[in-house]
View (cartoon, rainbow, N blue to C red):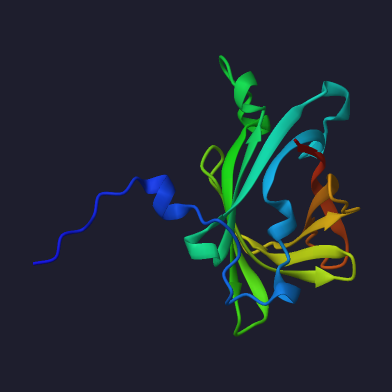
Length: 178
C-alpha cells in the first residue's frame, strides 16, 4: 500500500516557472507573473470618475503548464461592508498551453456574478488577443495592449447582435507592484 504524502494545496498548485514543454516563443503570459495594481476605466459603463481601483496577481501553476490569475475589484484591502455587485469582481483565469492548437486555452470565472468565459489566446503583433465567447454564446475579444515590463492596458469587448461592431465591456490600466 502506497501512502500519499501530505502536502499543502498552494504547494501543489504553484510552480516556480514555465514548463520546458512550452516553447519560449509560445510563452505569451509569463511576463505577467507577479502583482499589478489596476485603475478601472470601464466596467459595464464608464467608471473613470469613480476612481475605482483593483488588483490582479499572476503565477505559474500545474507544473508550469498554465498561468493562473486572480482579478480583484475593489482591491482586497478595500473590500469592506456591502459591495455593489455590478462593480464586484473576485475571479480567476486559468490559461493552459495547448500544443495541438499552438495557443492558450483560457477559462475565466467570476463566482460573484456567475460570469464564465472560454477563449483562446495568442500573440498578435505586440498585443495579446484572446477570442472566444461568454457562456451565452456572445463572441468576445479580450486584449492586452500597450505592453511594457511594468504596465499594460487590458480591454474586454463583446460582439453586438449586429455581428459587426464590438461593445466595450471592460478597460483597465495596470502597473506592476514591485
